Length: 311
Image (cartoon, rainbow, N blue to C red; front, side, top):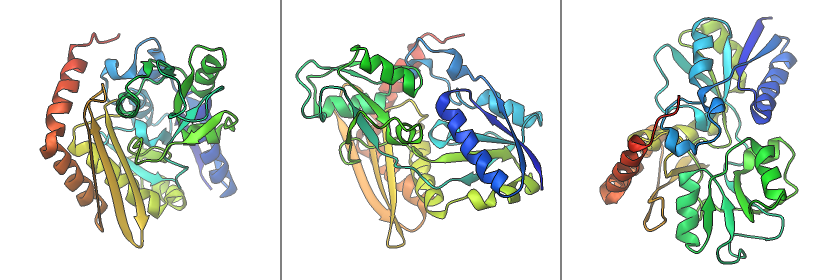
């Protein structure tokens, strides 16, 4: 059996993910080590992610470690991986998916609908902000950075009336006590790839790919391929107001896509199904662009370009 080195970010959730994959590999008889690598996204903690404007902000340094053979594989939240994997790398496995939806978390309120006017809701995601504003324009949306437990502490201390998080992260860390509502995808379309782990390796590393083949889940591969193709068609990274959510139904892939103005004034939704996940993602993305998504995203990207870049 092989000695495998995993590259991972150092957050509580990232380490849960790396240890989860490590345990599965050890069950196969492999010897596994985890190397913690600090990424650009981890270093910038006082600026909303949408204003940083750096694709691969949570993956670049880990890919450098892969390229230099300091690690053999990298475990990522798939939604953090750019839709175009850089030359020299490949996604060897996409794991069975945790619930990809978002959740409403609050101490005092049971749902988005039950929040009082002017309630303070925390999220740094333009995607979540836009869909929240469309549903409840009377809410005050405020930036919220930090790992899952940091965000929950800010909620519990009264800084926010509610926060929106990914169901997958909350579930993996066993922190579901204050989850009040799993938000339907029809109300808040999740981020492309949310809930899935992407295992990245050096391109053409056949031995490592074979060791990881058992981790690749067919349904997760199909659904996330459709979602990431949609995101790629729209030119988006993980910090833009774009949602994508796919399910396999009776052998076909059903895909919902969303492009929204950050202020919630315009939310474009499109859904269709097909058998080719990549082609389906491109078709839904193209339809959204033609319906006005191009103008929405042009304005968003222009604002991002005008934002000061962080060192």
